[in-house]
Structure formats: structure tokens, C-alpha cells
Length: 212
Image (cartoon, rainbow, N blue to C red; front, side):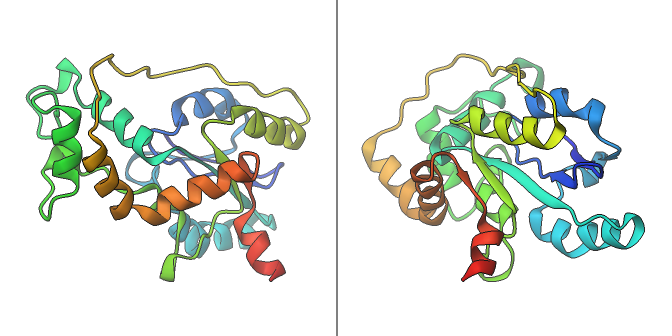
């Protein structure tokens, strides 16, 4: 999952884990002329806004617009849990197969989350100081058609995605009590996703802010 930059289309893909990033990268990487790998591949929107965008503007005279995908928060956490139950990481600190999903979420919400539940936040990846959204184009994971339409228009060719990195099938039941705690703890992220879905699966946060 790398940050991809497409200077002819003036676009940059901000990869948020567990939002279909592998499928997006597989479809778009052949078109990318700049790829951030290794420790730099998960550059937050804040760092992109402060460092990468100005550099590309000064070096290539291109005003980049960023895009990303947001997944329903509980579903994104569920995907993280499944991914970390893989047998091949059983001996690593991030292995979560010894926990039920209920226990995983409870640990995530604790004051000292164990390594297996340290998964970051979608909202934090998208936001700057004061929680201001810095992404130019935001798409709902549940509405792939909107992202495909947007990219097909920008690339002037049909862009589609194929499922990749399918996680193991394991039980992921969650009690209503724990779900309520999760929603309260990540209220802003749940609210953003709800707003995104109410907007037909696409938002332009920075453009909307500039228009105010």
C-alpha cells in the first residue's frame, strides 16, 4: 500500500489501511509516475498537505489534488482484526487470533491498547490541526462506483477494481454495549462516514471548506 502520485492527472492517492488500498494500487500503479514506498508509503494527509504537495508544485508545477477512501469504522476495525488472525503472524506481537472480536475492540478502547490493537485512526490520517479535513476528494468504501467514475473521468479511460487481500473468515460478533462504547470513542469518524454516505458516497471536504 503505497502513496501514488499521478502528475498528468494532478492526483495523489492517500492510502488508508483496510480501505481497499491494495485493489486501488493494483489498478493504478501502472499509471503512477511517483511512488512512495517503505516507511513513507502511509503518509498522512497532513504530511502530504505540508510537505509533498508544495514539493510537487515547486518541482513539477502541478497542483495536486488528494483522494482517499473511508470505510465504515466498525467494519474497518473488523477487517484489521481478521487480518491479524493470520497464522503466518502467530508469533508476532500484532497477532490477534488469541482474542475474540469483542475482546479485540475492548482492548482497542482500553487506556493501554496492546500491540495487536494498535491500528491508528482513519480520521487522523485524513485530518490536520483541530480535526480539519485536508483531503480533496473522499469516497466511501461501500460506493466503489463513485471512485471508479471519478478516476475514469480523470484518467480518460475505464478504471475498475478487483478484490485483493481477502481476510480470513472468523467470527466477529460484537455486543451492543461494546458497539456503543466504540461509537462514542470514535464519534467523529462515525459521523464523517455517515455524512459521506448521505452525500451519495463522495465528498470534497477542502473545496467545501474553501467555499464557506
